[in-house]
Length: 256
Image (tube, rainbow, N blue to C red):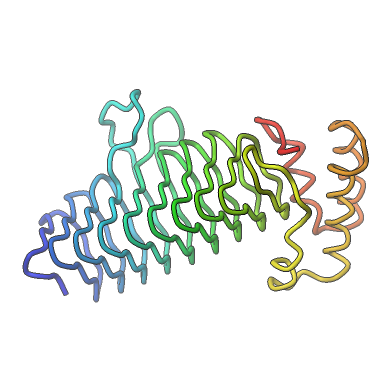
């Protein structure tokens, strides 16, 4: 249902059973998949593609130009997957030509009020962003990551899968998978054991991840030495492979 006060450009492509609420605006280059609900007073613009069965609450800004002085109105994109919940006053920007030309958000994410996802960010599946979590440009967030309220992530940082940020965390470096952090700047406080158990990780797998964490953070080894030790653990336990790969490839350095 399209509310009588909504403005939907004739060039926009809307799937079956899409709802657009009162006073919302849908731009010319927007595509919205079946069953998605757009609340009142939402602006969806730019080259934006939204998948199926999403719910976008009131006063969101979806697909606006990035807050980047280098942006020159090039036709970059925003892509949002399926079954995401996006609460009030969120803002998601399109990408820039300085990166891959796209900002992308995956499936089944729970995104609370006032969250900002800047240009060229890549967000995986099943994440939770609590109120006022903010991603600067070019941030990558892995599957099942949780960002507590008022978490801020510096541009070009990577947030590993299954990691957990406490409220008010400031991430200035890469956060490895499975690790729990808090503080400004962020400091490590163990692994996300409870989250891993809920997601079906075995006791042996969790124990191996704990050994890898201790090698990186508690052993007194240098970073290069810790990388070698974690690689040895990963060779025996596949659950540690993503942890080993992440710290081997980090560009901004690891939260220590």
